[in-house]
Length: 255
Image 1 (tube, rainbow, N blue to C red):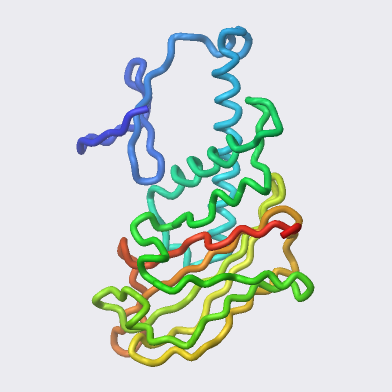
Image 2: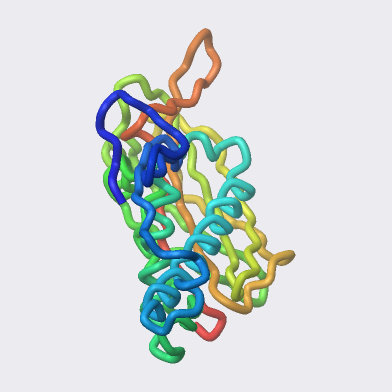
């Protein structure tokens, strides 16, 4: 597969070349000279069929994860959206699938315990959470209470955050996505807006997960978004390299 680097933007077929768009990037691939029937039946194409099956599964699960994240964040999703997200999710999901040491090649799947490979994944590739918020926060899963809790210490925002030049306020975002085979469910919340120049008192964010199934894996996202102030009203900053949202933990029910 190749990437188009010039200003020419094509979609469709030209000879044996197919031009297509994924997110904001344009790609081109050449059609191989074998029929679908031969690829589907010829023993010499068994590895091709295996790769195709696994890539299709990884792509499908990655897209479900992206949809679940959108549902959890709602309108805040645009604060972290990155044109490369789909491709990066597929790549990471493929790595999780290939970590399956139980099933044979071509029949491998994404096991819950291998979703730990998403820990540290940045939704915005240009703003990792650790680069905009310097204090690591360890989430707690309160199983009996069916809550995810984040406890923040008392802090001075200017000392522990990399604020964009225009930013006056900030906000935390907490999301949980449960993944059980191919069933995805999500919940999300956001904090109040806080001023960057005022002391931030110790406090907790609590997200109820009572209405989602957490029997598989539970993926926890923490994000920080920044806001300017225009005519007395907060305005979100959406430019690249500003708002960070990462997977900070993947819980398993047994853990």
